[in-house]
Amino acid sequence: MRVIVVGAGVTGLTVGVRLVEAGYEVHLLARELPLETTSAVAAALWYPYRAHPIERVLAWSQRSLEEFTALAGGDEDCGVVMRAGVELVRERGDVPGWAPAVPDFARLESAPPPYDDGWRFTAPVVEMPVYLTWLRRRLERAGGTVTRMALSALPDQADMVVNCSGIGARLLGPDSDVIPVRGQVVRLAQVGVEEWVLDGSGLTYVVPRSRDIIVGGTDSEGEWDRGPSPDAADQMLARAVALVPELADAPVLGHRVGLRPARPTVRLERDASSPHQTLIHCYGHGGAGVTLSWGCADEVLGLVKGLTG
Image 1 (cartoon, helix red, strand yellow):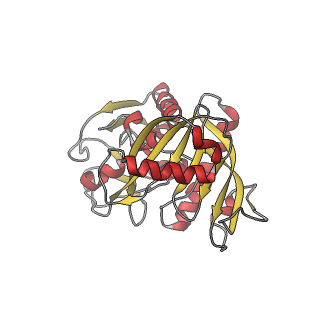
Image 2: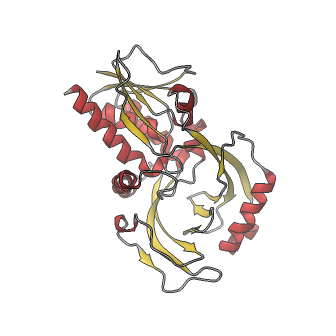
């Protein structure tokens, strides 16, 4: 069976890999190629963020954690590394609901001022330019294709379409519940930082990779501007240096902006209103596209198998 996947970010690529490796003929169509997508901007630390409903998100996240852990231990070229780190919060409260999914999750005995609480755990850090290239290569080696195409509507001449268009679903759905959440990051030179750090009370994070460090971030709902803001960059760097003083003299390598595809709930379902073909939606992952990617791809594959026998 021929399947058209719309979108070539991390969700579209992962869905495409799962389908093509299961024996389906898979073709990805996208306005933006993988390294041009919001996915390519992400710091991509495994962390369930701004995605609902929580029950489904937890299941998808746990499945993705298992897959990323296996990749980190088995393929040096994929760009996935397991890194320890700490999340700090300013007021003591409950641990995150996803904590049981993380084998080495441990609450801190004490947190550095001005924080009152925190936890340490090991999580996948996915170097997105490397990983997206690896995913695309895996897809194409299995017989799938990726084609740049600016669509004004979802294709209507295929046996099956899987809509992984991210923010594009606002037009292609059409789904007015999808809104952009603008995220800006700064790339710094790697100066010997090995552990990631999050400020759970805000949106400050420091995520080291092999050759650089990603510092963020912003969370501007409803903003479409992809131009970096110098003021926002200065504020992010100041917050990051407060968390990790070693960053004070780190050279700035660049600035990037992505538009997270936020929605009240992730939409992963068959669209029964499509009369002439099978249509499956998989979008609205908010700030957790990478974190949910393998779990959602597995569910899409299950839907496709159920519909095709």
